[in-house]
Image (cartoon, rainbow over all chains, first blue to last red; front, side, top):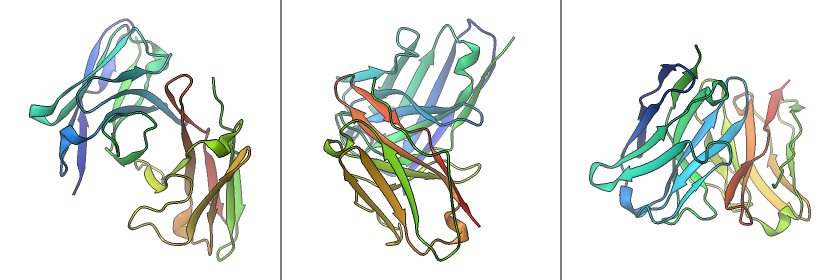
Length: 122
Length: 108
């Protein structure tokens, strides 16, 4: 059974950094692209970033490009999101989502974690 | 950027058919995926590649896509289908994932 468990969320001041992690199990991690999708309180889904199986293809939403860095460690079955220069509008529940393809192009998200909450406020 | 437009809400009586639309420019040439999100829960994939159903999703859920509109159809609606539904595509020109704004399905 596929399990995705996010961690690392919390309350952080504007301008500071935070690193999210996603521990994956129940599937061959390095066969699939992975993504981060966020949801602001009471709002819809917003794709944040995606990374291919071998980290060769990486993409970011315009809203986070230049501030966030996605990475993965296939030896540890883990996905990461380094979030820098955080803004109040980054406040959201951050989901880790598994792609059903290796490359991450034209993705669809067949499994999701339960999310980790990031609150950016002074 | 590419925009997907969904109605904010759809209401349907139990046992009837609910249709949730997702509008986008020439969306018919894209692959559309649909997610169900119940309150306090993570999204769940219910339809992929326009009309395919993941294992475990009831046959009552179906999808279509043509022209400028994709549609998620839920037949014989049950109280347990009450949720937010999101459509999603890949916009190759920008290399970005795009979600619709979501539709809240209310079962009367």
